[in-house]
Image (cartoon, rainbow over all chains, first blue to last red; front, side, top):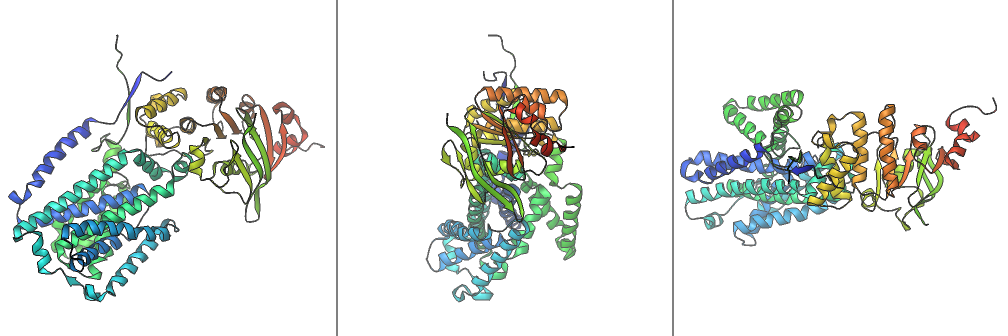
Length: 341
Length: 242
């Protein structure tokens, strides 16, 4: 009695083209140390890290509905854990990055248990307060430099790679690797059975719960995984900066406001949004950086215009007009061609 | 035959407003029960209590013999209780097919090709197959109601709760929907149906219950109940001794 006249597919022509172009772009990017200058590589590395942060924030806020303005808690925590694990535990930096991620996920569990009691705007404020608690706590740790911070000892930096250019290449590749891993992980998650549940939660929590989805548990898992991965990114960020202080590590502007800008401009609740948003953000930043404070005013202006004219972001705007997707997430039902057999 | 659902002394109030007052009733396996009552009588609240969207202040709910009073809405859905919402609650950003897939994968526990085929079957039954790729947010009212029904059926329900699914539909739309519900009932699914469109309701249900102020007023054979003075007075608002 089953419907044999229709079939279901998840690919699309645009996704195939996007995958093909994506592989070419990735190969070109991997080869950057041979064609790009030092400044360009630094910039691209920063872009990859922001892209990763944006993808994670989008997963959490855009899909799970957890609008956090306190993700700097995990960026800073990860950064500090990198310093602590390399300086005091003597771990190699690469191991310390993974360790920072694991510790970030662990610390996010009690934080989630606390702030998940809050809803909506109260949740957002709660996350910010938690981030401030993190900042003030780390400012008390004198072995990590207290309020003025500390630098990564030269020996640890040298242990990464001998020459400066080798270290810069390594940092670049790690940032690129982080972006690829984060995007792939988010994509695979959204494509899975759990991801379908998360997308349902994005659209309607009430209906999701009535269709067998354990809303609380999925949100909790997303929050903890996001916390862990964000802490790992934080470790990577401060491995490049080589210096950490509470104000830089737990900066709400650097690690949350700009990230929210990227996601909202690009298109919240879509996988493509953060990628577009990152390109827009860095294009604006690089062209307007010389203007000083005016740059921030322009950013704010762009954000307001996009919210008014295209509330679903650049990608949402594109998707409304053309039925395209870069990642094959959607299902398509087609009529099977009639075959005489 | 043991009842599939038993409500025993359910109480629920929001502050001073009592929405379920010592409410007890049961539903037999494969039975279809209709619930009528004036607006604000506590009909939807009863559904919220059965599906776990609300917790009662007192009383017990048993499903297939086991106490589910403390179970979450998600767990109840997975064990076979499905509902359609009075105000349709589609996943607006997802397509009709994806909406059905959510129910098939999360509540019915199907996966891969099986889930896809099952969702297609249900959409065929509810006449939404031709709109499978359409975004749920762009559907008309009739199609939104059909989607509510499709999603509920995709959970492979043992008990189906329909909340005013015929409200706002034209006569012919209503007939089509009633036929679908009759088929579902004939396949052995137990049904509780809240409806103001009484003739649609009477075409399906085996038993009728009237509630008002969170209390059961009358219960029994549909035609007898419809003629009873309590129904005429309370539900239809006609003074009997006028």
